[in-house]
Structures are given as C-alpha cells and as structure tokens.
Image (cartoon, rainbow, N blue to C red; front, top):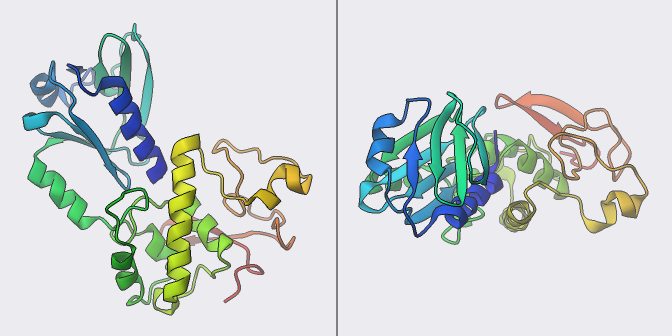
Length: 269
C-alpha cells in the first residue's frame, strides 16, 4: 500500500496537470460513470491529501475521494492518451495531459462535510501544516499497544506505513514492541520531527530513503540496495541480512497484520 508521501506527491501531480482549467472526466470501467458525468467539463479547483487519502476538489460539485488501498495504481502522461482499458476507474484529461486511476479501494464523489468527517477520524499527518503531534502523543501515551502497532494506526498518525514505521524506530533505537505508554515525550518529539523530514524527502524524491549520510553505500563501501521499492533503508525487507550498524542479522515478525522488521541489537528493550 502506498505510504503518505506518495499520496501527497499525487496531489501535486494532479494540481500541476489540471488545476485552474476544465477537465474531461470519464470512467471507462463504468463504476464511477454517474459521478464522472457530473464532473465532466468542470474545473479542478483544489487538491488535498491527508495520510493515505487523496481529494480532488471540483468547486460546488464536491470532492473526489480516492484511497488506493493495496491494489490501486495511477498512470499519467502527456496527450494524446492511449485508448483506456476497461480497468480504468477514473480518467482525467485535458489538452496536455491525462491521468488514469485503476483498482482503488475508494473512488467516490463526496460533499465538503463528508470530507471534513474523513479528516476528523484521521490522526495528524507529518506532511500537513495543520498537524498536531501532541494529539498523536496523547493517544500513544495512554496505550498499552506496541509503538510499532500505534504508528501504523491511521487514527493515531496518518500516512505512516510499513517502511516508515520500521525505519524511524530503527533510527531512534526504539524496540518496536515497547508499549506506547512507555514512550517519553522527548522520544516522541524526535520521532515526529524525523518522520516530517523523511516524508518530505519522500515527496521530493518519489522514493523512501532513510539512511543517514554516513551509512550510504558510498560512505560504507557496500553494494547498493536492490529492491523493487527502491531507496536505501536500514531494516525494511532486509531479513537475515547484517545490520548496517552492528552487523547482527535483521529480524522480521508479524505484527498488526504486516511484517515488522527490526534489529534486536540496535533496538533493545
């Protein structure tokens, strides 16, 4: 599932391609046809992102709410657009560009109050200027759940996925199984600010890089990571490989229906 930086990047891509002018809107798959007919020819007035939720604003007509889920994909390019396949849920196009949405968990036309209700049930997003990290800490500090599980709970922190969860805990030497209530305010402050910086870089680069300058392949004279996710990481999907810092094997285990990756030596209880 895409993490929050990808959704914020998509919000910027949609705005750059379509904002301020009329947009042709269609649903070749047919599942969004009625809403597409209402939007066709309207102006894209705003884009927004909160965690893993993307919103495309069409003035008084409403907002298209998109959640990619596990299988959603976005393809974009210049005009002329190729003939759409019957898997395209939503196609936006103008004279210069097109964007296709396939396989999202959610693609729905909603009202402004419905959009507010979605924001209200999400935790603070490190990429949003209105984020309140203290709200997240209030929930974390009262919880017996592991900090690793809490970071993946979108009601606690919005936009953090499996990669950022594993990597930020490693970067701060925190045992992923530590109860949230045992996390100190100073530790949470450091985690939050690190997430803000890492995810902003994710938006800028279009990939997740989490290793510090002294641990890059060039600095350590080691081979670069080879993985379809791209980017240099400490523990994510490195099960059994030596930790870049201590050399002990990286471990994995199931937690909150996802694979958790950590170094037991560098992240001691």
